[in-house]
Length: 219
Image (cartoon, rainbow, N blue to C red; front, side, top):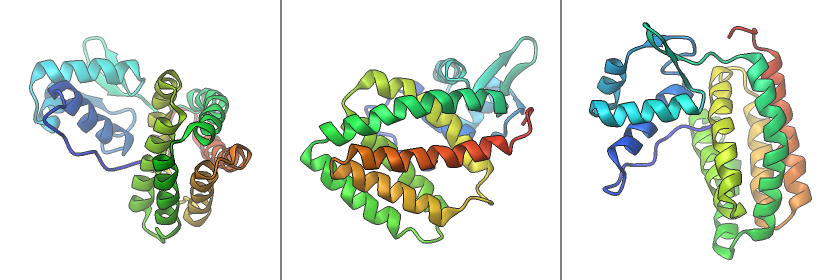
């Protein structure tokens, strides 16, 4: 779910900038699953030197988005049905915890931000890219509001893989239903309604499961 990068700031290291640029290319499928790429091509895409790009590659490899192929270079990790089923199995449990804790622990400012975001999501209309941007903003707000950095770290890899799945199915996505569920999730957390947040989340996860079941095993 996803799309636009946060603008780079002076405080960002070159390695962090390279990571965010390349991660965006991977999750939006501009670098398609299964394609072979070189370190040099990633340097050219990021416009950043070898050492920061190598650090970014190591991070992306650890997160499962890139694979190092001996004597061949790098491969964008395929979207495999078996892998995604395991991701969703884990995500369902961890994300339920995240939304409940966010509903409990969100600050007043975070609740206001979630209510405002719910309104933006609800008015997104047929703007799919806009929806993906707002969904990424919702993830960021929920991560901040749950006040558990270990939980956030565990989920971040799963979110990246699921964002690739959303993008792969962007032409067939039931956007009005997805909008309704994400708006409901944001409002439930804003209002401290953990049970309502879980209900919305479970339906979002069910959509993801349907997308996974439609994949070829070697996608």
